[in-house]
Amino acid sequence: MTSIAVCPGSFDPITYGHLDIITRGAKVFDQIYVVVLNNSSKKPLFSVEERIELIRESTKDIPNVVVDSFQGLLVDYAKSVKASAIIRGLRAVSDFEYEMQITSMNRVLEEDIETFFIMTNNQYSFLSSSIVKEVAKYGGNISELVPAPVKNALKEKYTVSE
Ligand code: PNS
Image 1 (cartoon, rainbow, N blue to C red):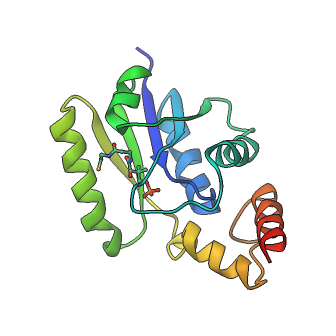
Image 2 (cartoon, helix red, strand yellow):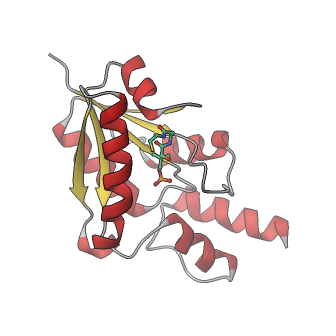
């Protein structure tokens, strides 16, 4: 039986922290669907199409990764691709409450889909898309934080908008 997992997120934009989770998840599951979903509490900088393209470029060397987007509930997407698992990264204790809330809600919605957490590599425990955007906005060096295509895209965004 093929093991299929979904790795969901806003990915606005993808960082080395996300990539670490995707790479490690891809060693455990036969197929990983990295899916861009809407987080109603966030206002994204990049369009869904831009985020997908940046994830594709950043994951092109991982053969068992498929990149996609979905408007709707994560569990509905997971069912549509026959995934039995959801993968999320956990950076610090501060992530725990939010993750517990969405995991519990997803289990209420679909009890047969299990969520697995991967502890973020220590070197990325401080990293988030928001902090990367903040640094990029004010011209800081983000080379160690995001893949090169993301760095270029952020440079372009902030140059164009200024
Ligand atoms: O990267 P994020 O913003 O922490 O990811 C959160 C995300 C997009 C996975 C979450 O908001 C989500 O699953 N959105 C889709 C709508 C949904 O299924 N909501 C019910 C679970 S709370």
